[in-house]
Image (cartoon, one colour):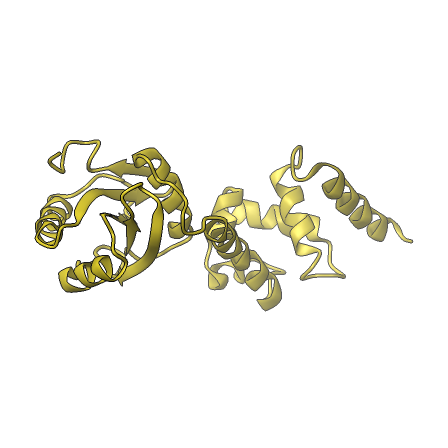
Length: 225
């Protein structure tokens, strides 16, 4: 076993013993790149990536094309890096099954945040809850561009009735980086609330997400009690 092979095995063994706790960011990338680049010095490539994108999250948020502009990063490595946040999103979503209780805006925000991981467009989700605030359904109902997402009143009403929902909450992301509801967000939310009320369903909240932050319109007093 040569020194290079020994280093790889030591890093793998360290991860298996302690997880990623104590790993520097470059070691995290170095370990990941072992599985795309079996014969290259991935330590050098890890430092190049961090230099290019500034941080570990910057690397994982970069597009495959941007990643491939870093010397030594080809298709396999770019796909593997880009896969990580997508896998994290799917894993987080899969852990929450129907029946999960969402008693307040904090719980709803934690539930919804993973759905917006690494999402370049504005997307709207609809969550249906029963009378005990247990999850009945959560689905994407609209996808816009990088600055806007529309509201489909008919579809929202149809889904709420199909799922026999007592409560509905909406969530969408702002790609601008600010989780502040716009005037348009508030106006659209009040229209949805009014339409759902006509069929006996309560719109309990609309959560605006930006990165790791979220704002509840209900908690902000933008949705009447």
